[in-house]
Length: 171
Image 1 (cartoon, rainbow, N blue to C red):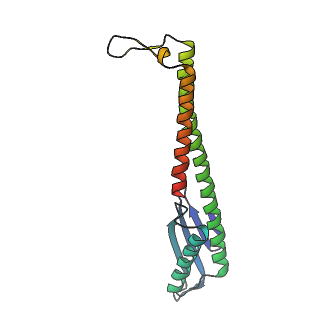
Image 2 (image 1 turned 30 degrees about the horizontal axis):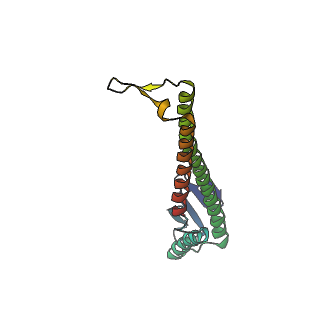
Image 3 (image 1 turned 45 degrees about the vertical axis):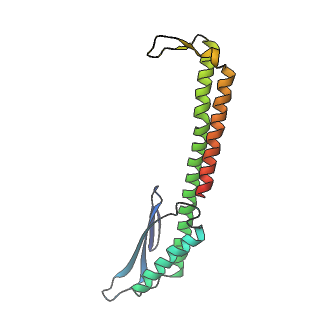
């Protein structure tokens, strides 16, 4: 939440923001004019650049202030721009940290599963699977622990590549 003189800007983690601007001039009923704008941060990079997005928001503020015949002061617009810049880059930083955690998880989960299976194959070679039928299948005759580690590493790398490609498509 940012609050300065006649401007109040709230934002949420869901990339929503709320701007309330109280103009300096009073109307005929001796009240200050209030301009309220609700919006969302651009979700995808190709949707808006920061400059385009702020330009659109400031144009809305100017449009509403001209409709009520109470112009928004340049200091107000500068304050709104500064606060929106802070909100935009905090959101971008938060999205980047979520992306890094996602990359870590898509790598580590298959790798850890592969380590557990390789450990069981290496140190418990009689590890068997007993399905509904009453026969034993010895994994160690088909899969060596090195093969399991190789497969789990390749799955992890494949997951990372897919995640990177999906992210690049969204940019």
